[in-house]
Image (cartoon, rainbow, N blue to C red; front, side, top):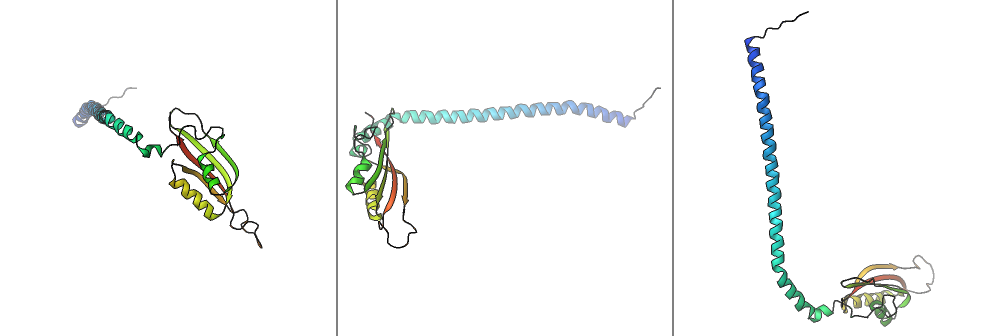
Length: 189
């Protein structure tokens, strides 16, 4: 069985145009891909150049920052940020800053602990205490923590009224159970 197909002149022209357009579309796709890759590369080079310029600017500022830091370290403000060396032992053997403030204000301390892990830079000292106090004593303790030097930051504060909901005579009027954790820093030696 044999088939013969005779294409008209219009059909032949259409096929010729289609065969010419297919490679043209391939060239356009390749050119678009190339241009897109070049644009992405240019963008990444621009970003890297900007980052390098910023890093150079920071490096040029280093002597000025070192000078500012040296002047700050020699001021009394710097000493107010840190506990003096040897103030708090890691095992809690010496009285910590928080414990001193609590005892000074007459708080009944149930538990006190000090954690001072060894680090290369400024040593972070966490001091926790569970104590019983009335609202005015708690206010004095928090105010003293805020206003005294060295700087102490309250990391955790939990206040609980253990007799909340009791009817009749309360055993300890206005007594609150407080869990307080502060953090101070010891200046590196």
